[in-house]
Amino acid sequence: MRFPGWLTLVLVGACSSVNSPTGPGACNPTGGMDCANTINAIVLPMLAHDGVHPQIAPDSELCRRYSIDLTGVAPTWEEYQQNCAGRTPAQMVDYFMGQPGYVQINQRLWADALQYDNRIVWYPYIQDLDAQVGKLHRGELAYPDFAAIAVTHPGFIGKFVGENVVAYAFLAFLGRDALPEERQDLLGLYRMWKARPNYDPMLTRFRYNACTTDADCATGRTCITMVCQSTTNYRELYIDPRPCAGNLGEVFCSSPMHNVHVQLAGTQPMSLDQLAPSDWQVLQTPGRVLTTLPYFWEAAVDNVLHKYLGWWHGGVELPGYEIPEVRQALALFFQQKSGDMRALEREVLLSALYLMAAQEPQGDTKWWHYGPTKQMIAEVWLDSVAKFAGVGLGTCDWRFPNLTPRWLPPALVPPRGPIAGFDYQHESRVMGGCPDQEAGFRYTDVGVLAEMEQRTILGTVCGFAGATAFLPAAGADKTKLIADLFRRAFTAAPGDEAASLASGLPAADAPTARNLCQAMLRSGRFLFY
Image (cartoon, rainbow, N blue to C red; front, side, top):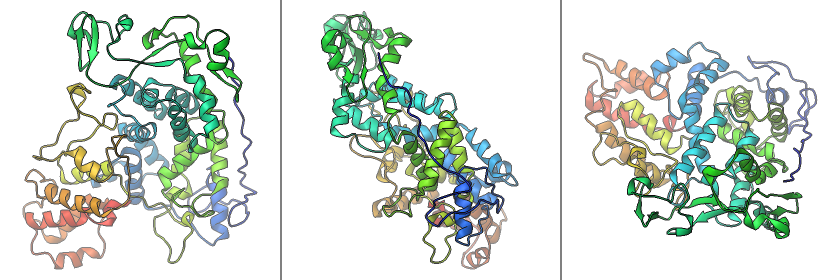
């Protein structure tokens, strides 16, 4: 096997000389933000040039921003006081990155990027690929190694046919589709992968196909004539090295553009469990080629910046929706950190672009002058509503959009909540969440349908008899009721609005609390963070 070495990108991101949209300048620490941060070294001179004096947002605002971004749910007032009040941004980031939700929300986003779909791909393949995402965000796997594994993993390859496997690999890790010549060129490196046809007696020796009783078969299969036969259509993969052997294989299983040829020892098909580590290294060749292509590191940086800043690549006019110098400097930083995803994300989360308060100055259209404002995705909104009201609404599993028993063991089906008739997956999908990767994908726009669905959900949740966490205590007055609900909904104490709200309330009773529950959770202040 031959493949090229790593390409080293020569990128520039110096503090003292920045070719920014607003001109060069020296970096001086300001507002509690220093120039050691890669982004600050570029952005602080830009802000100084524009006459902007950045300040770190209040810890209550940062706590909510960090909690939603890093764990997928808004914090309670008690959680803010315990984990955020009086803490530095670095301490908050370290705390939230240490929570299980940090890995889980990134698994959800990678499921979107890699198009998990258990209606086609066998669920154990998806489980293993999802575990690789967990390793990436726990710091156990470098980003180039993760990319090489992901685009040559049965959980990914099993979803696509022919050139599409190359196209979606490019979309996931380079942020663009592959050109026709790139599809044809790299397709040869995938040619040893094969999908097992159903009812194929020639493959009875395969681990997941041979059987003596029904108990030997995976969910949805029956043992007939010592073969696990399935009524489902998911793809079970195996490796056939024969097409890549000999003189023909030099052409058939090669990439002329990158001077790479793949070949395994042996001439017989192998089930995936029979592959040695050296075999997997050969099979991951197309993934390693992908990591050497231009823009590999920058595309990763773009994804992280868009995830945490919202406005980054959120429009088409440039300059305005990106700062090229920031991307270049972060790409170099990411390389120097050997593809440590946690280090890259931490650098963004502790930068001025993320730390500033989300208050847009009047008439200012430069997004980097203030902190980000983003909209909750459907699952985050539902989970935060459930947390506010003290009700378990259930969940959806982003790895397995199809919950039919033939496709998924009952033990892996997400539990339902206590509200009769409330289907978490259905409600989320109406708002663009829980995508099935086949008929629908995630969207986050505030559409009319989504808003109507939110109103319906809030009417159900806030009116549910079991939703008692937000109800007033005995003897509570209206001002206290408002303050308690305000803190729970927005992780902040109310200001002048408390008195005006109290004057319009009939009483501090359960009906009033339920009406306030709907009003607060339906507000833009709750949906956006």
